[in-house]
Structure formats: structure tokens, C-alpha cells
Image (tube, rainbow, N blue to C red):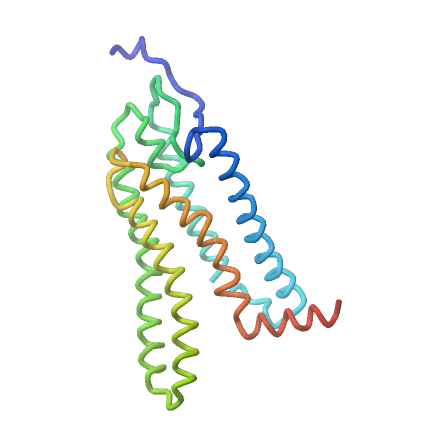
Length: 223
């Protein structure tokens, strides 16, 4: 096909998860409930932090925001240089890089390379730190004299590791292969790290924290 006869795509149509209106309505209700719970959990965290000056320490949060925004900006700028011809239908529920790259009629080697290299550094570095920290925690937990203390510590760590495994497992499954092989399984995995893990994070990591519980008690008593 000559370049003159190609229709240049300037916008994309998101089909969602199923493409069928009845299923999409049910999924929309489900996701809405999950998003509202996620917002509720984060609002409780914000209220607790605002009421307790001891929590006014930006716990690596600013660093995380800067790195993730730069990472997203990199892929956005690399996407701008590509050409998209005739097809503009995206079988996904948001503009994820891989389903968009699959529609490109340009060479996406640089984009795939950046996903592999930059993505591996950004995701594997904190994952390695998490694994090392939990290995240190387990080595100390097993030295506790009380069996009840060991069970409590392992219960807390178990819930943390479940969320970590869901998040990193789904991300590595989606992005650690060429964009041309993107499939329905990758879409399901995307739901896990964009909807499911954000729902669990506030309740497992923050609201179960001792300092956060104390701040919430102060907030309730003040109200």
C-alpha cells in the first residue's frame, strides 16, 4: 500500500473489555464500586495524615511520583513519532502502550526496547528491594520466642506479599514480551494492576499501620 493511499489515524476507539454492551454495563458497575472503595481508602489516609503532624513526612512518595511521571512521558513522546494507518480500534479499556503499538504501521523496535530496558529498571529495582526487605523480616521473625507473635507477623507479611505478587506478576506478564503478541490475557492482567491492587493498597499497607490507626482514632475522637 502506498503511503499516499494510507489513512492517517488521529484518534482511537476504546472497545473496553468485552465489546458487548450488556457485559460492559455490568463491568462498569463493578469497576465503579471498586474505584469508589479505592477513593474512600485514600481519603481516609489523607484525612489521617492531615490531622497528625507526625505523618507529614513524604514517606519516598515525591520520588515515586517524579519517576513514574517521567516514565509515562517517555513512552508518550516515543509514541508521537509513530504512524498509525487505517486501524484505530483498541481492544482495551485505557490507552495502554502495547495495544496502541500493535496498531502502528511504523517500526516499533525503539518503543519495545524502551519498555524492556526502562521498565525493567523501574519495576525490578523496587521489587528487588522488597524481596530483600522481606527476607530480612522473615529472618528476624523466625527468631521470635512467641509462636503467636510469629503467626501475627507472618499473617501481616502474607497479605503484603500477596498484593506485591499480584502487582508485579501482572506487570511483568504484560510488558516483558513484544508488543505484537499482546493478547486478551494481557488485558485481564492489566485489570489486576490498574484496578485490583490499587483497591487493596490503602487498606493493607497504610490503614493497618500502627501510626495510621492512631491518627484515625484521633480523627474519630475529634469528630
